[in-house]
Length: 132
Length: 132
DNA sequence: CTTAAAGCTTACCGTTACTGGAAGGTCAAG
DNA sequence: CTTGACCTTCCAGTAACGGTAAGCTTTAAG
Image (cartoon, rainbow over all chains, first blue to last red; front, side):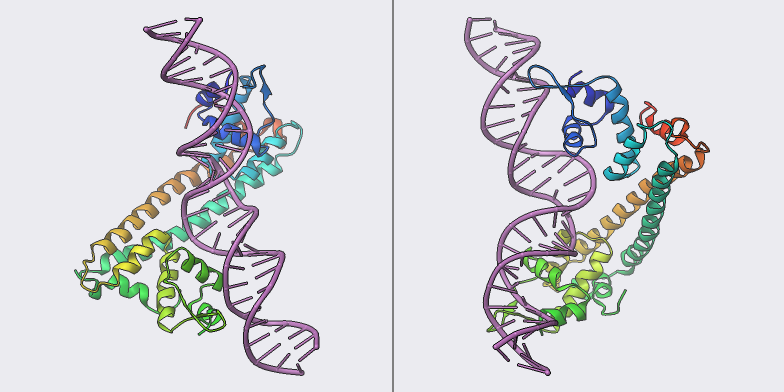
């Protein structure tokens, strides 16, 4: 199949498929006589796998590991476990940071009843010299 | 004061101060005879303001607006309000996305009791052709 | 048969908000 | 005088692509 068909089937843009090949996440595609990339249906599965990992915010480098580890069926699950666990830890860390952030922004939004910049409580809060 | 002193006082790296000037977030600094940038203590306040905004994940473009709107004391607070409100909306949106993400990752982490890649439930889940 | 549109190729720039590093000028101390 | 700590500018790299251009090939229509 052609790259546009693979793109449609996997829901990954053709541009992104070429990008993945260029950075070595996908192996070099077979070319047809006209130079077009030629794909097999197995490539759909690989790309769906990659897309799902990206939807989980897993980095390309980590996905490379997940892809390569699958080539050895008898390998241990440890790598997979640790990548997923660490990803979860990162997500939770970001959640904590965002919670603080949302809290501060909420306080700012509700603080200001002024109508002129010179009295704006939001700006006054942000200008305060007190450290984080 | 020199850039390193301003950096220390504002807790913004000197490199970043030059960067802010280069993109027009800070006005062009006065130069001394030797070519060094020369700052006044008022610049500390400006940089602290910028740093606090960045800690709230407010984009440079939005900060430019917040800085410029402060030059007119009689201007309306509407711009400030909307920037902060939209920032809060973005943060909340990200929080919702991360919550889903964490949920999926948790399910993956607890799903797999296998020790070999060929039986790994995590990889099997990620390979499934079912769409998001 | 011709032509126009669509799809393929590569290659390079832009995004965000910086950070690192190289090459070179300046300044204060020993 | 030299060493080291500053300062300067400029260039490159980060993550993961998206946009656009220039130039092929294929395909559908007239």
